[in-house]
Length: 278
Ligand SMILES: [Zn+2]
Image (tube, rainbow, N blue to C red; front, side, top):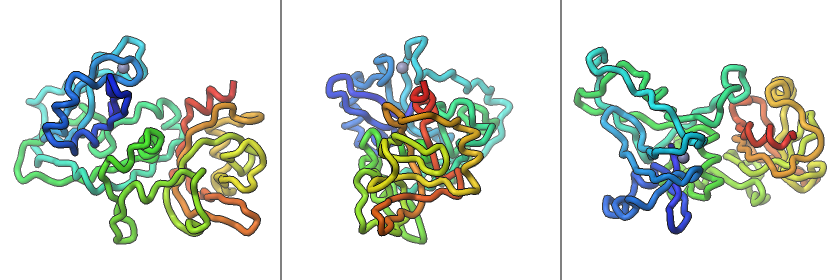
């Protein structure tokens, strides 16, 4: 799993945050971190020479949502020797996944390693020198998780966009806090959706989208969006976490929005969306 909770302070730590800590700091956390869902003891696993990303392990409760089956059962003899791989922990790319295609309908909450494919299904063994540096990629879901946990700035990551290296946290804004100066700026905008007209607007407000942020679905994508998500009547009681990548538009009337013409630029927490529909 990617995040754990501190037993005493309740603080949330991500695996990359711990990876980038001094060994001393890492030791201080030993025995004090737990699964944030079931509360069972957890421990940190460094990124490994065969390219697995840093993560946390725990002996979860049987019904814990963060429990994951162990699939790394390939025998070493059958594997193909490859150069060692190392994730570049400072410079990341973005993997724009389509969360609205049929293939991804099941289990968008079980997303794991994005760079190296599914853990454990590789026949390769990474034991040759020199080590190859592999750029790590993050999905919108992962950025949203970090933004919600308010620890983006602690990740120490930068993104390369238009030949410029920009710290990740500078690219990600809460849509409740955007300013007019951001008009025309491209970036990630996240927050909680509260309502929709079931047509083109997904709104951060419970009423029709004036003076507040909305996501606008354009003609090319709206049909597939509603087919995938299902329409919901009325307001979404508890809000639905979502993130969008695009250009912020702040029009004369006061309307603020990002228009989507590619569904890979949008992630919505499907589980929360569904639970809001009851
Ligand atoms: Zn657990």
